[in-house]
Length: 355
Image (cartoon, rainbow, N blue to C red):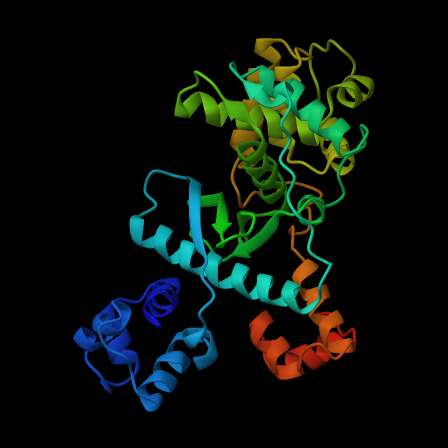
């Protein structure tokens, strides 16, 4: 039955039943579409194709019997983000992850299962505990103290599906789990593709905290602060920060922080907060720097601060798709559908013609 998939695809585009009726030029009514979604009726082939075209999916997608659902969604957003926006994001995430999982099924043995850390270092009862948890995860993953070149690549190597979506400005990201019958849950982190690279990296590290930390006795606000502390410690290891900045400073220039940004690949604002967390700057010094950053507008997701970082773009699914085509496991037409691009665009990528 097509009900769940039809509703998901409609919500992914943010369409109401009435709007979908208009999009397919009234071939069937909104009431009939509602019955399709509740599996009370089944559309004929002509209507099925019209719905699929309007929703940007294939008829085969609507007819698929693969069962997956999204659980544990945790949006990190400004208060004005609405329920409709969230439902559209959830539907888009399920759609993209399903394409991802279908691709992995075509290439047996390439899927990387998520292995959540289980030791006591990840049990958090106060915000400061997140510092040790970040260090523990780096040791567990053999990352050393060096800055992380790509958070998206790291997470996907560890079995986390990273999805970049066109989200509203007030949504930074989310973590969730995709559940499948008789199979392990798949962790997912969603990041706003419109935010700058600095914000995306911090969002990915923050949502990673929500995947690995086990909170005890902390309210929601404290959990968010602990996740922020984890993200800062994971991206800017204490020993390296102290080595480059010194243990105690009365002041630090914006220029010095801009140079350190090139090393740690974080925003200047994140570096200032990290200096305060580690006691490198006194309260007055931190206040002066933060006032400068706010005056420059460098504390927003669209900051135009120096040495802008490239977007954190997840590439693993595309690589797998190109591999599947090369090995004859999938047709170019199906590969284009999975990547949601035209066949011409797929051919361009197969030839290495990167935009």
